[in-house]
Each structure stands twice: as structure tokens, then as C-alpha cells.
Length: 297
Image (cartoon, rainbow, N blue to C red; front, side):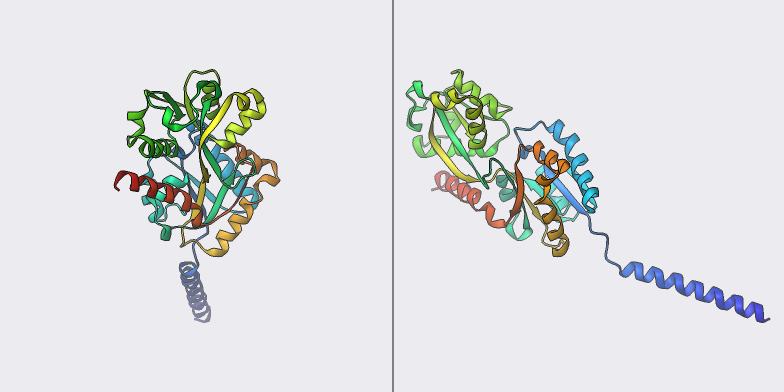
């Protein structure tokens, strides 16, 4: 009888221990995971195929290196990305500022990071013509050929704003033809060889092209400029634990200090990444308001 009593006691203790463990597991917070959503259309200068292969590999490899569990999600549908963000399938988004400003409320965003090109926290969008063309002002561009970066909505928006301000027309009604190119370098070369009349190109790429070939700067001219435009921004969801968020951002700021991190930055032609705030959206929000005032005065 004694051994039976002892057996029952041992079984009771075991059951109690298992129940206690299960209750503790239920109370324990879920593992903190960086779940990043990249909107691929926000990087028009980069092949989406290359991004789809490289991003998951480098993000998750770096996560393992620094001890941060991570998952990568790639999107071509911004509404699908927005819904996943609101439903916590992803907790960090990376996209162009214009895309973020149009599809996410400021209250849905918290601190994140921004990508730096050429040592600049923000880029400028330039309107450039050939010096020999005599097209030294936007008012002289009626019925000319415009070339812009494919899938770059900021360039298209700025072209519409300048067209509305100058001619009270949309860009498609001002220009004889609007040509799209897959690479900024192709835009610069197209203008240099006079295969188009005017281009919209980011200053970082224009400066790089001019450094490689000084004749580009000598033979072209900037006739309009849109300043203070961040190229890509990332933001955390406000529900993400602040300590975890700070841990991730501290590691992001160190990316340029080791080879794997630099290779991830190289995908974006970037120098480094630094912390961003929701206020970094102000310049594109102001641009949208400028367009709205022209369209609905």
C-alpha cells in the first residue's frame, strides 16, 4: 500500500508540474521577431528579381549574425502590405516616402531608419536639359520629349506639378512624348547623347555619373530642383516593444561596419542607414498638398 501511495503522489506532482509549466508558457510573451515588409516598386533603379533573391538572404543572414530572429516579406501590392501591417503579420515596413505617406497614417508609424546615398540624409530630384538645346526654363519644354525613371511616382508627380504651375496642364498634355527608363544611368546617357530633351533624375545618380564622366556636367544644366526628398524609409509599428525596436535600429546603424551588412546596403547603392522619424515624411506630404492645391484650387 505504501508504494501505491508514493506512486500516486509522484504522479500528482508530475501532473501539477506539467500544468504549471503550461500555464507559465501561456503567460510568457511571444518571441520577438523582426518581420519586415519591403514594397518592391519603391526601388525603381533595382531589378525586382535581384531584390527578391537578395533581400531575404541578407536580412535573415544578418539577423542570425546579430542574434535577431527575422522574417522577410516582399510586396508588389501596397494594399496587401498595408493590411498585413495592420494585422501584425509584419511589424516593419520599407518603402518610398510617397508610398508610405499615401497609404499609412502617421499614428500607425513609429521610429525606423532611412537609407543614406552620397552622405546625404535626403536626395534632390533634378530637371535637367542639354546646354546646347536652349531649354533653360520649364516654360520652353512644350512639345518636347521627357524621360523619367519607370515606376518612380515621385518623378511623375513632380512633372505634373511643374506642368500645372507653368501651363495649367498635366504633363502628358505638355510633352510630345514621355519615355520611361529602367535605370537612372540610362536617363543621363540618353540626355547626354541628345536622344531626349529633358530628364528627371535624382541628384545622387547625376553626381555619380558626372564624376565618372565630367563631360556630362559640362554639357547639361539643372533648370529645376525638388530638394529634401528621402529615397527610402522604414518604420516600425507602434505596438513593437521599444527595447526590441532600439536593439534592431542599433544594429541597422552598424550595417556599414562589416562585410555582410555592407553587401545588404550595396543592393540599394547606399552608404549606410540611420534612424528616421515620422517627421521625415513632411517633405512628400507637402508636395502632395502642393499638387492638390493646383488640381483643386
